[in-house]
Every structure is written in structure tokens, then in C-alpha cells.
Length: 279
Image 1 (cartoon, rainbow, N blue to C red):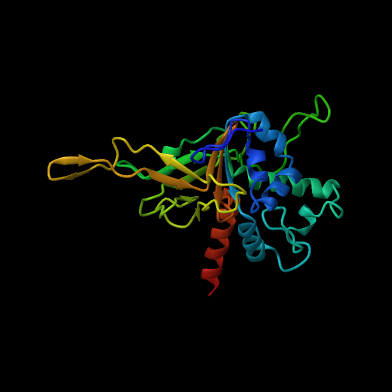
Image 2 (image 1 turned 90 degrees about the vertical axis):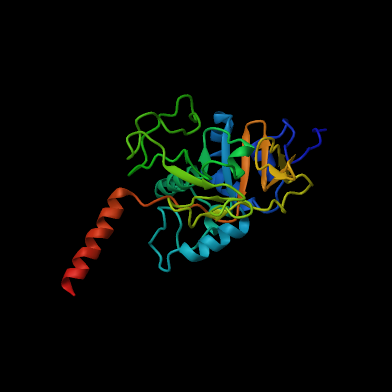
């Protein structure tokens, strides 16, 4: 039997994938990880941070972003049929066209991952800056690069040095710590440079057993002084996340949107300029 969880820190027999599987609100995310072939990727990295949208978050995002007409794709992978083709194993077919969409889905999911493990302190407001910048595993590219399957069927797909439109750098992501003005009660992921927007960290209520809270040692932080005596603040509770053998799972109440490419941003600006000049 696996060891019992204590204060939200999962047994080290658990992994990111097994912990997600114990949530009754992450079946969609698990399904998309499987379809995009990200499961072996997570096992290969071995020290990851994964921001995991809930089923409700995926449903709301899909409804708001799926194209209205056939033949159009959002982010290169979401069609007018929504998530059904990705989650229905009987209707799923991997042809050449769908392979390209599969790669685009993987790109989107990589924006939800870091190749290092954030500590609990990264989510608790302190005396310094409460908005931090992290580097994701998304290396934006115009098209899928070739990956030789050696040995068949090939190693887990991972970004390679020098790849991408950002000169080999991963796309950045900002975190607003819980307890701060920008982060709110539990913290927010994907905020802008002003600490706005982003998605909230999940409350952890969908895990099938207790232990969705981590208690953070606040020694040396947030001390109050009353009548010349020093009093320690209560321990800070960080909800909706679990540290496991190969990293940490951070549940989130929304789907993270990768920034548009520089090329698309330039085209949008030019269109707006031309439109304003013709009025």
C-alpha cells in the first residue's frame, strides 16, 4: 500500500500522472496529455511543475474559443466539434492532417509545464515581489520540426536547444502569489505584467481523498509585534497542489492561453492601422 499523505505532500510512490488520475476533475486534462503524447515526456523530465486545468475549465474554454464554422482551428488544434474528437477513442484517427493538430495541441499543453519543480514558497506572499516569472516548456515554432524515431517509436518529444521563434528560449509565464493583491486568496497563474488576468489556483476539492492542502512554514515571515512581544503568524495554507516524486501538480480553474506569435501580432497591428486609415 502507498504511504498515507500528510499535509498535501503526496507519497513519493506517487507521480504527476497518478496524482492527476486520483482527481475526479482532471479527466479531460489526462485525456489530452495522452493524445498529445505528453505522458512519456513527463516521465522523462522527472522534475516538473504542471499547471492542470480542471474539467470545468476545459469545458468553459472550449465553448468560448471553438470556431463557429467547419474548417477553422483555434490554436491550430481546436475545431468546431470541440474536444469530442480528442477524448472519444473510437472516433479518434491519426492521419497526416490530424498529426499536425496533435503537435499544435502539444504546443498548447507545454505552456502548462515547467521543467523544474517550484517549491511551496513560490505560491505564498512574502516581503519581496509577489509576482514571479517562470520559463515554460513551450518553445514557439511556426511548424513542427522533424524528429527521427530512434529507436522506434522514438523518444519522448522534448524541446531541443536553439529551437523556436524566441532564439531557443521558452515562453515565459508569470505567477502571482497567494495572499497578495494580484494573487488573491490562493494565487493566480498567467497574469500580465501588471498582475491582472490569469487563472486562479484550484481549491483541490476534486481529489478523491483528503490532503489537498500544504502547510507552509512561515518562520521569519509576517511576524506581528504586540506589547513588545513577537507573535508568529499562523501557518499559511496552500491549496490545490501536491508535491510528488517527479514534481508538483498545480490545479488551476482556467486554461492558460499562450501569447500570440510576433508574426500574428504584427499582422494584427498592420490590419488595424490600415483599417483606421480607410475610415
